[in-house]
Image (cartoon, rainbow, N blue to C red; front, side):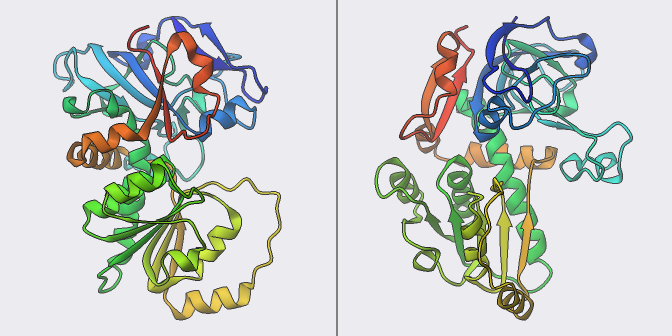
Length: 349
C-alpha cells in the first residue's frame, strides 16, 4: 500500500513509498485512511529535525492528524463498517508509568510512549492501518471529512481541561481570554473559548484576510499589534506560537490569578533580555500559573469530538484552505501564502 514516509533525521527524504499491509498485531479494527492533516510537526520531521522509525525499520510513515473509515471491526468492538473515526496518536509506555497506567498517556512520566507518525510507529499517511478499539474515536458523520480537524482540536480541549482544573483551586469566574496565534490551534482554541461563553481576543501578525474573518465569525476580537494592545488583564492566555518574546510578554499581562497555557513549541537558540526578578514578583504576588500542554488522552478526544459536532460546520470548512489529492502529495507539504490547514486526501486514491 502507498504511504508518505521519511528516513528520520534525514532532511528531504520524504517520498511516496510502498509499505506492507498493516500487521494484525496492531489491532482487530481495519481502517481506510480518508484524510490526514498537515501540521508543523510533519514539516519538522521532513526537515530531519526529529522522528523515530519503528524498531528494525529505516523509514517512518508520517501523519498523525487522521480521519478514516472502518473497513472491518469485530463484534463487540463498538465500531462497525462505515464508521468515520479518528485514531489517537500516543500510546502508553510498555512498563507502564503511573500516568500511562491510568489512561493519561499524554502525561507519560518516563518518555517511553510511542506516537504513531512521530515516534517508533507508522502514522496515518498510508492507505490502511489496524488499531485496537480503545485508541479509536468516532466522529459525528455530519462533519464529513472535517473530522480530520479532531486531533488539533484535542490539543486545545486538553488545554481548556487543565485551565479549568487549575482555575478550580479558588473562586474563579473567568471573563477575558487572549489567544496568541491564529493558526489552526489558535483558531480552535478561540472556538472552544467562545463555546464557553467567554470574551475572546486573538492576536496574530496578519492584518487582513481569512484569519481576521474567521475570528470575527466566532464573535471574537482580532488584533495585530502588541500583546498590551490586544488584551491586558486577560484571565486566561493560550499561547500558540512558541515565539520566545511573546511567551514572556503574555506572562506580564494577565489579570490576578491569571492562567497562561503554552501550547507552542519554541525553536530555541535565541537569547532574550528578561527581567526575571520582576516577572517572578508579578507571578508570585498575582497567584499566576504558567504551564505547558502537549498531546491528549482519550477524554480530550471525546471532548474535542463534542466541540466539533456543536461548531458551525461552515466555519470549520473555512479552516481547511487546501485539500490536496494523494496524486499531488508533494504539494501538501509545501507551505503556501494564506494556508491555515492543509489536508492530504486519500479518499479518492
